[in-house]
Length: 501
Length: 97
Image (cartoon, rainbow over all chains, first blue to last red; front, side, top):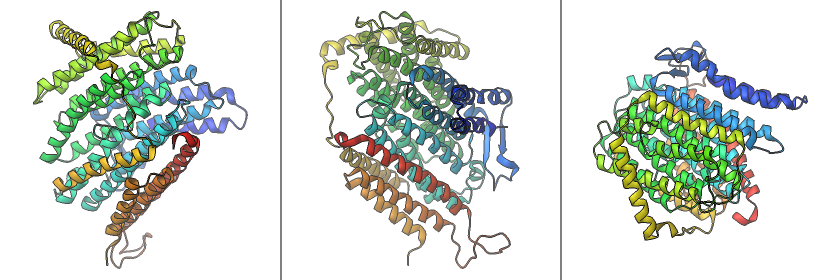
């Protein structure tokens, strides 16, 4: 039953290309929607039962590929399905390409790839499905007409590919040491050794690069901000969660080395603050959101580094919803007003988008009763360094105070497409709904203090002229940029290897 | 003599060196292909058993066929991504390189 969740979108992607040559262009759109929505049926059948796992084709676990459906991936799959369903509705009015079926097929492949990666409990199978999703995302990022989008897609492709090869290399090392690719069998049969530690170091470094966590974040802001809006929502919302799911699986299977845990904790905190600092300096609305992804991924990594898997899973779920919603809402404004500059954008005339962006900003800032409040509370369990955590929360709020401040200033009054606006507000209400479902209590005192602190800080920073600083591109050529950042990756890899091997 | 695994790792590092030093985008795509070739060599090496036979069923003593099969899949991914990368370079045109 579980493999069907992957098979249905793949099948419809195939059928779309079969329908074209025989002149059935009008069924492309229904097929696309069928492919996006059909996994819901499988999900709803499976969701009541706990701890399902099966080996595809009825083979034994040693020779087959195991897929599972349990607590560790149900929220990833749910977030994936919610986001894809809404984004597919959004993209129907968004994409006006001559050959729009290409976009649909690539989105279906991404859908299948992500679902496949999330159900997989076999290292190599996980890699293959993640790769299917990534290849579609490179192509979809490159579709954007914006200047620099092709370069961003190329950078994304090169680094993601480099990370994949090193990840497969570490899978090879694990296979060499244990003789299995199945995570459960590996967990039962491994003996700790230096080689295994080194393999874990390589695997984590390459997954960090693939997820785009500071200091390996360099491809993320460009790719996520220059992609077409619905694709940005998918990339930031759910594609970056696939590598994090891999890290989660590795952390569940192997006992992590003390050094590795400390290093991941350090990386998590620095990613949280670096993302916020860079977001504060951006005047490009989508880039601001993209840098917030870097920061929020730090939160999820924090959960993994402190072995607080509940926190990591819930925050990954929450982030998928609110970041997807933010990209869609802001993207609708950008689409209608034809600019990405925060100073020119406005939501003043459009009460629906204003409400949706305000609600989602509160959700990402961790204000109750939105879902961000619940997931951040979960992350705090067993964490040392709570002060830093609260500080990061306030920083996030400051940066969203900035976003809302600039959006409030009047500008061109052009309304976006009504379906796109409806989708945006739906996601905002979904974050509210899940927030109330998980944690139906208000913490008014804390929240109002946080918001007040954020507003004061925003005012001070604005008076200091922080938002007038202009960022300049550091590298003249794309090639040189790739050289430099490969060196950063090499250094981090070397550091992990020297410490762990 | 070095074994296939070590050789594979060395080839991977040569490819990585290309990523670090070459500015030309096409050369970078080629460098990453070298990394992938090294990876394939490494994997095929992990399945090697000294003096063993080829991996067809009624053999008693045979090499491990799994790594080689896995590499077939990786090669397919590799072909897809290389073509996509080259297409992107073409689309970028002159202004961005």
